Length: 270
Image (cartoon, rainbow, N blue to C red):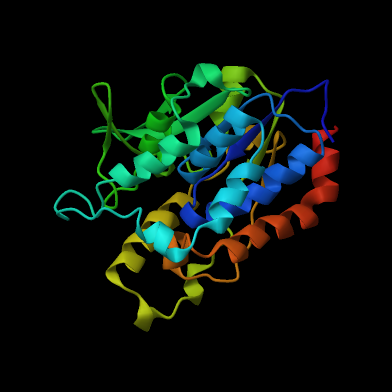
């Protein structure tokens, strides 16, 4: 499936627990001998992308998270005074350190761009150097849930705020010809949620994701990108935080791969 003549990038969007859908997509790409020129990602897309670019595969990551149970995810929660954020994020950082150890961008097999959002001007900041743990922590710092992540003298938050599918930087930095983009949030229809059951957190997260879904694809890139959008059976807003629900999100990725394979094969071989 790979195309040696053209440089093709891979863009992995954010979507919290919906990110399990990225695993079968990348595994199928690997089985097809496709290796991207570079990868970009934000939020969970940065988390999975960093692992893929470091090790050249995600099967071992797949095996790790599949074995985790609800209590394992609960143990990653370190609550704090909600004045600044719901969680401290220290336990999540330790978990990421187990995944990446002390690896830096220099250790990667595949070049990686991690999208974050810089405070206080809310401008996109792309990270391409330093420790992977720091870049990913910054990119997954959902406002209100995690505090802004300090990196050097800057404070950074979730990259989805400004770039929920950060494909443009792949074209700019690596001058790729095409990009395969995985959009994890546009396939969720939150209107199916029962309004009587919506909590304050449902509304906050729903607003957060709805704003990101309004971003449009730059027409100048419309023929240069192929977007895969997994569809999810469970459309509740809080479904994006159910990290203990591996199977349903994983199979959303497997399903979109099977539906897209023919068109994707043509796209990658044009």
